[in-house]
Length: 263
Image 1 (spheres, rainbow, N blue to C red):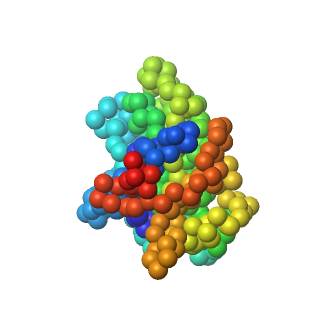
Image 2 (image 1 turned 180 degrees about the vertical axis):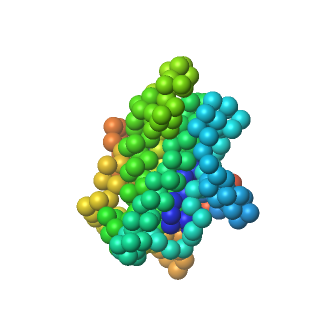
Image 3 (image 1 turned 60 degrees about the horizontal axis):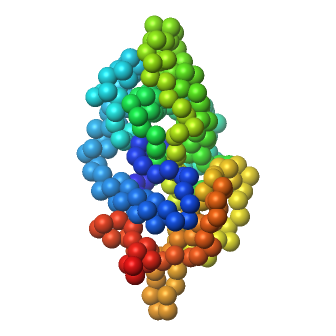
């Protein structure tokens, strides 16, 4: 996965509302997505970073060719500032100012995609910290989730257009969307590598996973004298869920479950 501690916001695929019979399909899509993210070129990322710092023209969301984009990377740093504790008080204040400016672009990105029919998104780049409450990445995710993904479309438009909202109100009403139709997948990297360690990991205060509808744990497992990979659905609300630990492989075609190989 990309190492983007300042947050990568990706628009792509993966609804969180699925039954156990759909798990193989969802897992394959996740595997393909991870492969595509890993294959993203550094030159493309730098181009997206430059675009993220350009002034926002909110009215451009009404032009489909300008608004529709599958990927947004809004930060130009990598490999540091993963934890709030890494920052001095003055650095934290400066970071929050920069974050507010970057999130304006995130609002335009999501709103521009949702009004043109996108209903699924993936947020990637959340890296491990000692405590979930220390992660500014989780703070960013909570803002995106509650202030964009789970907010009425007209109120998201107000945040985007601000003083120009009245001038755009007719178009906002015409292209309103139902936020309840939007699904979100959050990809997190943990300090735990082994699946057994992930299974025994407790949910801490401030951990956004506590409110997740579905949690899929993916880690390494021992298979005799070699290592393998397996996943387990640790939490799923709303329907029956298998308790199985399912082996998988990561191939050029994406993530392949053992059950798929044997069928």
